[in-house]
Image (cartoon, rainbow, N blue to C red; front, side):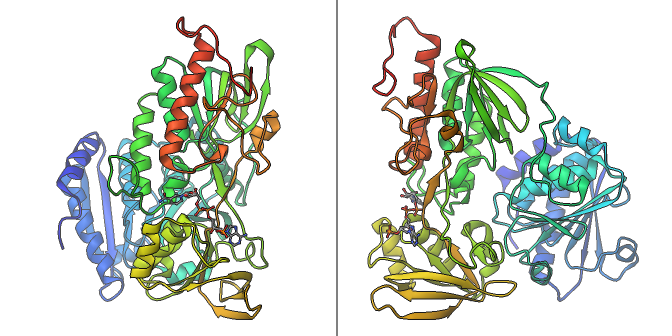
Length: 541
Ligand code: NAP
């Protein structure tokens, strides 16, 4: 097997792990004949990580030996981190995205510090009972490492009461199926399913403490008032670029992202049309963009903005799940969220074979599983090609007789011989505990059929995330997009909008362009530079 850690990564890792203080033990347990390729990967990966720092020890054990009995290890491979002190377990090799969470877990154990917020520490101080938290993950899921790190941080901070287990679903399909964890990340606290998807940090901690799903957490930092020039809602390409441009113009800015930084590109398997970069995984592009932005401005992930009120000349009061902030201007870059079909079975089987994220959940449908991708745009075709490359048996279902997706994607679909059911509509998704079939109607002939399917990937476009814009009273189009002029000014003074929430052409390049324009307009309006004496907008004359 070739080196897992490339020379460049090794250099970076050397710098990171050079900060280690206390010794960390990585204990790998394997059983020959069970998940062999993953056992070999784990063995090699751990040797390579250990070779970077003298503070990391490794031990290799067979399942059935004394150590495995002592730590109750039964699955191969299993990795424990310093198990004499902590309860941190990877069930399955820490592949792909989880490699990152493992490195951070090693850092936390060695330094005895966690990466969680002060707010989470205060919450966890209340914990009085033992908790075992399990997070089901997949190697390609961009949301997973963050959810895994909440669990691992909690188990480092409350090593007396919390144990964390990160379970890779592909190597542990039986466990995933048993729990019905068909989408990732899925989290259980003890035996209770607490969430599907990445949660805000405070929700995760409260669910852990309560042992039940907690969806709304009272802001703990009400006293944490902070003043900014600009509050930016949304950490996608538009919001991140806006923050960078704002700070470079001298406007103090902060970005609040309620879900995952990067927005939709995070779940785009490949981006091939970002100028200067021939081909890049969406998640990698996001990481680059986020790293660059973080050099300028704070980007808070998992923070939702609940309300914004206008405070006359004082600007805006922004109520968030992390307390109240004040700003002189607002940029709305909240993007769009995937559209639902609203057919029977869709909601009931969501996370049980119904998915809106091929990058996250596709892994489960490798090796010939039957999947139907619904839609005819760029997303549906990108998802279909990705699932096909994983080895799934893909069929596309589209309500028209032609695609609106780019010709290049259509050509690739033809080359791979991916079948298309034209002029067809999904009527119902069927299955008991997971998706088993799909009821389809041919819209031309009116005939109906039931088609066997293990997975249904819905990629039928997006609707704008406009709740806050609507509450603020901004002018919206009839489809609900925020109306902005060519300088990204909205109908309300000092409020700007950028990216997919404004509708129009939904491309990353357009979003970053609009993000920069929004901030430069805010600079003109808020800083009144001498060379711009007046600013007018057709929307806001
Ligand atoms: P989209 O372009 O809006 O396409 C949505 C597709 O779903 C259309 O084919 C539409 O059918 C179908 N659809 C909509 N509602 C439906 C319903 N209720 N039932 C069945 N089918 C339905 O959405 P998208 O593909 O998610 O793309 C969103 C935006 O992101 C687009 O602007 C796209 O260009 C961009 N994007 C770009 C790239 C890229 O540049 N590589 C990649 C991904 C996404 P009709 O055609 O009949 O309306």
